[in-house]
Length: 103
Image (cartoon, rainbow, N blue to C red):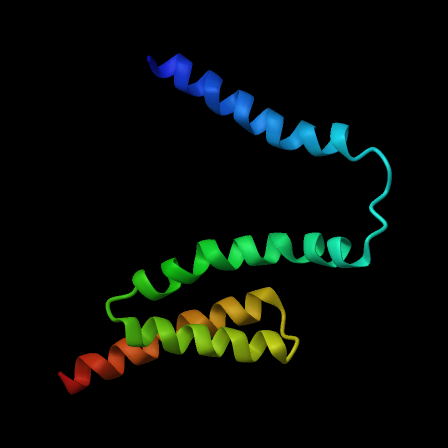
């Protein structure tokens, strides 16, 4: 299959994923369980995609884990996204610096 075939297959797949729920579920979803489940799906997908990158994108897994802990702490405290991102980046920088001094 050539490049255009792959692009077409990807476009059809993406289109079906977006259109099928609209055509199959015309009425509002009344199930409380299903509504709460669907509410958290985007957050779970985002976490599943970013978690491995957080731990693997730094020189050591320790600095990634420290940044993750800082991000979770600040997020639960209700800080803004920019504050969480800057503090996590600063945590990686500090932990990497400390690790370079130790070794």
